Every structure is written in C-alpha cells, then in structure tokens.
Image: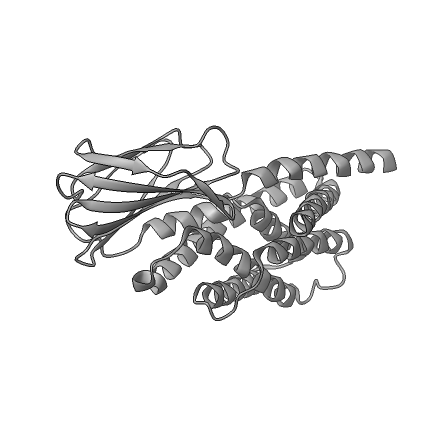
Length: 318
C-alpha cells in the first residue's frame, strides 16, 4: 500500500509539471492612433505558448513596419508601426497561428478618446473593429472566466475546499469568504495600492494547495471554521488573479469597469466548477469510494502542489 501511495504521489507530481506549462497568459494587441491614418501597435505574445509565435494580418490598405521582438516578463513584445490610407474603424484584424490555449485581447484607442476591446481565439481568429464606441469592456469578463477555468492552481484550491466543508451553510460561508478575500486583494493590487512580487505570490499559492492536502487527510483542524482559512488564503489568490490581469494591461480610463468585469468572470467560473466538483464527490460517495476519493484528492493536491512550489521557488532564485 505504501508503494502504491509513493507511485501515486510521484505520478501526480508529473501531472503538475504538465499543468504548470499551460498557465493562463492571453496574448494582447494594443493599437494607438497617433494621427489620422497612423497607428502604433504593440503585440504581446506569451513566451510559453505552444507552437510558433502567432502573427497578425492588418487591413490591406495598411502598411506595417515591425521592429524586432524583445522579452518583457512572460511576454515577447513586438512594436509595429501602421501607415493606413484611411481609418481602421469598420476594418478587420486577423491573427494567424494562435494556440488553442491562448486567446488574444484586442485594445484599440482612437484620437477622439473612443476605445474598442475585443477577443480573438483559435475558432474566431478575425475581429471587426466597430465604427461606434463600445460601452462596456466585456472582453475582460470572458478573460475572467477563462482565467479561473484555465488556472489549475485556483481550480485545485477550490476543489480542495469542498473536501473539508460539511453542510450547505458552511459551504456558502466558505465560498463567500474566498470570493470576498480575493476580490479585495485583486482590487488593491490592480489599483496600485498594494504591490507584491508575483513570483513569491505564485509560490505561496502552491503552499496553500499543499496545506489543503494535509487538511483533507486529517479533516479535524479547521472543519468548524473552513471559511476563516478560505478567507486568509483567498487574499493570496487575489494577488495571483491580479498578476495575470496586470500583465495584459488595463487602460486607466476604464480601470474600474475592466476590474469589475474580470472579477465577475472569475466568480462565474467558480459557479460553473463548484457544482461539477460537488457532483463528482457525491457520486463517488454513493458507490462507496468516499475513502479512496479523499485519499486520492489529498495526494493529488499534495503531489501537484509540491511540484508547483519547487518549480516556482526555483524560478524566483534563478
């Protein structure tokens, strides 16, 4: 039995190494109108993306002059000067070679202070720039949902919480506490009130997952007040959410709205996954696999969390 547990633990560490390579890092195209017919574009593409770097196709009446890409954090940055015969309002922009794991946020700022934001992906690789002003930054809502659903560390933490919570009242309090906590630190970080090193935050988030693994195995320490632990660890996860949002950038004139839509997207992502996790736990308990389920969950969180912690600490040191 001990040999089986060791093999399971090592296998889950290997799973963690695969999951960590698919972290949420959307591409971002920012286009600034400098004067009539003249634009400056910045193409931010995640370095860890699978496959070759995606390329952009601008309207035919635009001449694009690109500079050599350079690295900035998790992104490869390419500056592009556009000389167009007319305005790009009503025109289309296309991205070629976008990874299935990456969306591309498009932000276009015009001289008259009007703005457009949209989202491209592998299925919808072409976006039309509307001629009328966009009211709400809905693209950030989609990014919020995808960040939660595509962030394995946050998903594992939410799943782990469900294993130490008993009763609907406690579940509601725990999820509410986690939501409130990460909303607070997400706002504080994005608004520039509190800034912490992203590498350290990511390592600490991995530790929260390891801690949950021990809690699932014991189920005694915090079973009466899981909401308190969820609130404390939720503060860390909020800084993690903010790190992803800060890297792709938000314009100051729509900062609060973009933050609101991104946060709502995260909450919707949670609401999608929590019933799925609860259903899985319920079905396994009905076929008398509850003990194995709890043990497997503990090893899953412990193994994957341990790999992430070591990998992220190494990333800080090196």
